[in-house]
Image (cartoon, rainbow, N blue to C red):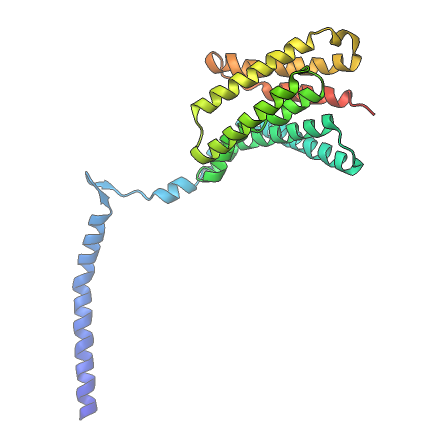
Length: 261
C-alpha cells in the first residue's frame, strides 16, 4: 500500500515537471530570440566565425599578388642562413659575409611578414602584427654595417652606423610597445634616404676608378639605391610600386659573383 502511494506521488511529480517544462520552453525560446536581436530588429551576426574563416578566393588573391615576393623572400633568407653558417664553419669572422647574410635574412623575412598572404592568415595575431611593422627598423642595421665594411661610408661611417643603430633599436622597441607611429617612419625615412645618397656619392668617387672589386660591387649598390629611392620617394607620392626587392637581388648577385676566394 505504501509502495503504491509512493509510485503515485512520483508519477504526479513527474507529470507536473513535464508540464512546467512545456510551459517554460516556449518562453525561454522567446526570450532567447529577443536577446540575440540587435537594436533595430537586425539579426545577430557571430563575429568569431567571420573573423577566422577565410574564403578560397581571398587566399588565392593574396598568394597571386605576393607569389614573386614570397619566392624572393625565401631565396634571401636561404642565402642569409647559408652565408652565416659558412662563416661559422670557417671559424673566422668575415664582416662582409656576416653582415650581408644578416641583411639578406632580415630582408627576406620582412618580405614574408609584410605579404598579404601572411596578413590574411594571421590577421588576429597581435604579436605578428606588431612584428610586421617593427621589422622595418631592424633591416637597415646590418645593411649599414655591410656598406661600412665594404668601404661605402667613408671615415665617418662608424659614427653613422653606431648612431643609427641606437635610433633603429629604440624605434623597434617603441613599435612593439606602442604600435606603429608616423614619427618613427619619418625618422627612418630621413636616415635611410641620407645614407643612400652617401652611397651614391661614394660609389661615384675616385676609388671606384682604381679598385676593380669596388667598381663591380658599385653597380649592384647603385641599382639597389636607385630602386630603394624610388620606393621611398616617387612610389609614396605618385606611382605606388615595390621594386626595391629587385634591386636587392641585383646587389646580392653581384656580391656573389665578386666574392673573394
